[in-house]
Length: 144
Image (cartoon, rainbow, N blue to C red; front, side, top):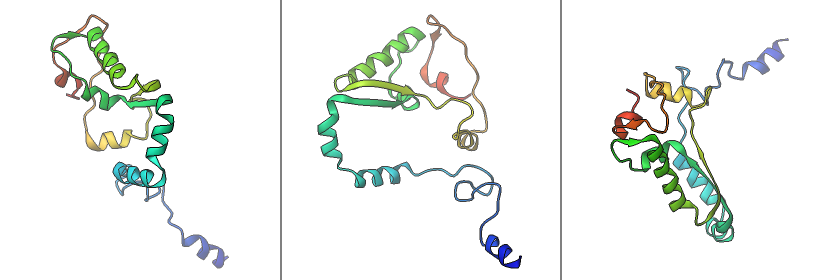
C-alpha cells in the first residue's frame, strides 16, 4: 500500500495542469514567434511554396484583418464590408483557390481566459444593418 502511494505521490496533483495554467488559474500565453521559428526549421518552405502556390487555401485572422483595412469615416456597414472583400480579393485571389476569414469570438473559447486577463471589461453588443453609418473605425472597434 505504501509503495502504491509513493508511486502516485511523485506526480503533481492539481485541478489544472500547471504547465498550461498560471497559479491564478489563467491560461499561460503562447509564444507564436517561437512556434513559427520551429515550423520553418522543420520544413522546406521555399519548395512547398513554389509547388502549391497556385492552389493555396488561405485562412485569414479576422481580428488582424479588421485592423489592416482602412475605413472611410461615416461609411455604411455595406461599404465597409465591400472594402474588406475588395482588399481580400486584391491581396489573395491571384494565388488562392479558397479564402476563409476566421474570427475568434465564439463562446466558449480557450482564448476567453487570455481576454479576461488582458481586458477586465466586456465590449457592448451592437446591432446594425447594411445602411448603418459608422462614424469612425477606432471607437467602433474599441471595447469601451
